Image (cartoon, rainbow, N blue to C red):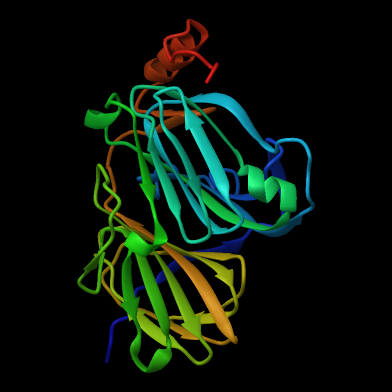
Length: 292
């Protein structure tokens, strides 16, 4: 008989707040639950559940702001997101695409609804993650990865039960294209009606799933849309059975950094002194111009 990986916690977030004028999000962590130590390298997850935005003549977005010590990862499912930063990177992601920005030693960036989507309006559905960099990489040079859906790892499940899209790491012998500083398996599972799948992540990895669409049964536990499920760090299989017409699940699984982690505003560092220095560097213009 298969050993199932125990569920440590399951919760949903109802409260929403605006991030700039472009994102209406539920913050699953750290505000929903403070998982900064428990769930490294993942430091933040904002979920903009599907939401209708009317056409607009004015820009919707988040103005220039700094980051240090992390990577920001934006996954677009509906709608489109445009990015600029003061390291010279620019990109637009459309449904199925991902942008992966490494802030490293420090960067200024801005994100907003892509101009075409802004003009037409429509359903907007995205997830943004902050991924903490290991101590040795906190001050790495900034970089930007524009990851297209067609370049991601694809796994077709048997009998037309669904598909897995691998963004980073390796799942069922299929690799994702994103480059990471610590081992991270990040992927999306789509299951059709009556679809099922068994996942197996390393027992020492911090592993959780966000149910973005539909209702499922996870290791004999009923879970519904918008639930986040955190698993214990133990060996065991994760058995998912679809209880809806179709489902969409985001899987986050990463090797723990096992380092101190402290967050303040847009910075995630290892010590209070590093956080203080980051704030001071920002005030003194070390992060560079916000005119880009």
